[in-house]
Length: 597
Image (cartoon, rainbow, N blue to C red; front, side, top):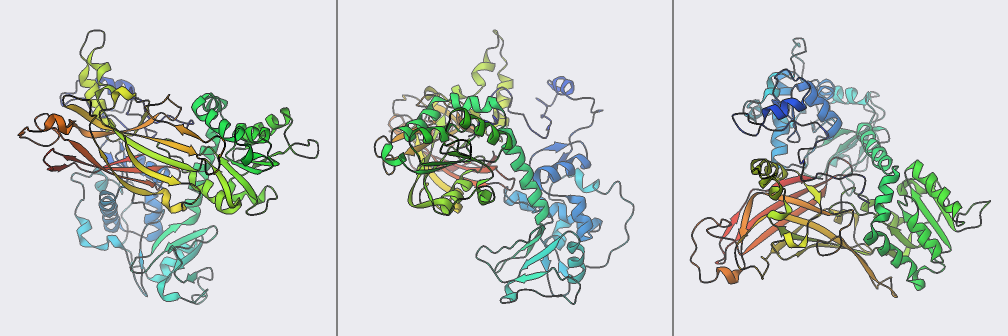
């Protein structure tokens, strides 16, 4: 289900939707002409303005703030106006955000940001004097964000009612307040009738339709976000996501992926005890290929759910052409619902817990990219009968270390007889910040594979989609000398196990050891390569030097990997902690790396 985009290929890892500028190749600007040729007369301006939330650079504060608004949901000027921030408060806000992002790359503003609501005054988290000190040295943004504004009068401190009155203009306000247990509403002296004080919920947050959300929990500061802005952003991402699957080329690529399609075909067609007479739901049906398999397998009813309007029409036409569609004119078993599965009841009549088999091809790059799994779990909990089958029913993530052959270095080392390895080295440095989706061959692995995480899709909870796991990579035993490990490669297997597929269980694998699929593998590059060698090669040696170097190769690499849904809808963040272990048990840790997919 990941065919709508390829992240980055070795040839150009500098690709960015934000048109980020590349760094110069060297201090003397050897490659400056390349950069200049690719830019349309930047008039010599340098990209001095660094994004508050990522590493993107811009030539002006205006372009930076546009990027923050569109990509990170943070409207700087809107926040200043809504919260009545003067120059110094805004100065502190910028430093505060930079400090929070430095501590946690997944930190997000939440549209209007955090503020602490007290009985009379409002104290913001960035009010502290320490935020008058620039968090980044030579931060150009601090001295230009108010260039186009007239000198502002000193503003009076906000009180609680003033803040609520300002925010009320943006929409209804919902506040989760520990002290308001048992209260359902307050008129606030008639000034804000749409304000509700709601006691702590299980997850510490409440939302109002078309309004603001204020989140609080015990011991936590309340945070405010404009629910309408967040909702619009999610809707926009969803529209782009589902719209991207309107391309027939994408569906041809997925259907042509024999590993993928034949695994689903075998699971549906070769397990008659599961499929015969069953009610089947296909979440994200696309062309309807899985639904067609289900109808052919003898299902009594097939509900094909597709959020893309175009593809829902296509699936309907295909079902009619193959005489399996069900309506007043056709006596088949397949019906198509143009809907997100979370809103299915608005489109068709279907009883909760009435589905025998739930099938979906939900997997994205690195398994969890696209965040479609949460929708499948919603469908499971809402529509699947107790004890019903979910296909696939297991998903497993693996990790291994890769060597030089999986990078672009070999290509650049010999370009028609010329040494261009300097380009390859620069590309490799860039890939330490950017995840790459590409096919890695078995011969390019320098460690044995290790299990990273397993999911039981029949029983897992939605919040278990985010996880932290550890793994230890051991060098390939057949190696007789040290090799450089340039990073790790992630892949996944999904299982149609004999729990439900009793006649013909099968496995869909995206491993480097099996034929390639359209998912390829996900590559995370180390900031610097780590020399590794089997303990048998290192035994008896009294090696000196830093662990992971040629002088003292590591006998194993310990990993701590966290995967979490990112603040940007349908994206994921991956953090990678790496520790080299010597044959004598000594350890060396490298800085944490954060990748966004």
